[in-house]
Length: 218
Ligand code: ADP
Ligand code: 5GP
Image (cartoon, rainbow, N blue to C red; front, side, top):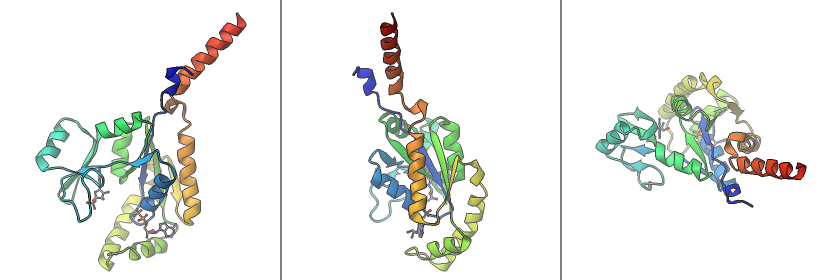
């Protein structure tokens, strides 16, 4: 096998959005458990670490000055200000992971999904996760640890705004039965990995096929 055939496939950017509580974290975790090449994007943020959070694993914790320098250097694929804190997706980290053949999951809202698609249109595969019903969404939110009634109601209001953007996504999964929903997500990953643009090793393979068939024909 020629060394060019060792070229890895290019990873893809799996952008997953949903109203809070519809199940994107659960589905993403399963995907990472099953597929070692799937990893989660680590955002940079100016907020303080919460107990148990580790720099570089949960977030890259940055000062405001550092974050502003990164914005000025165009070091983010997208960034946003949420509740007076900044959050952003570091460009170089994503590109390096894709080059290594890793698929990178992004847990972002519709605006983040739009921005990532604008920056990396050939790499982004976007999936929107819908709840089976409003009652189920409310139940899942209420069952969450540390969630009070006010938090549930705020997320229920935000859910309407998020759901309205479902048409922007490449794929849409209704997360009713978890096993069925997960099966749909894993099949999206598997088929998207076969896109010609992502299979760079095929350039060399096809060249070899043509060389071989040309030699055989001459
Ligand atoms: P999100 O990341 O979209 O906010 P989570 O993945 O944290 O949502 O899921 C919210 C809650 O709903 C969790 O307690 C999770 O275990 C539960 N959940 C997720 N998918 C299902 C499902 N298909 N059926 C029942 N409960 C689910
Ligand atoms: P938290 O501080 O609770 O971890 O996150 C607060 C909010 O910031 C969440 O809504 C989360 O989705 C959002 N967020 C986290 N990282 C990023 C990012 O890289 N880009 C954008 N646009 N939002 C992010």
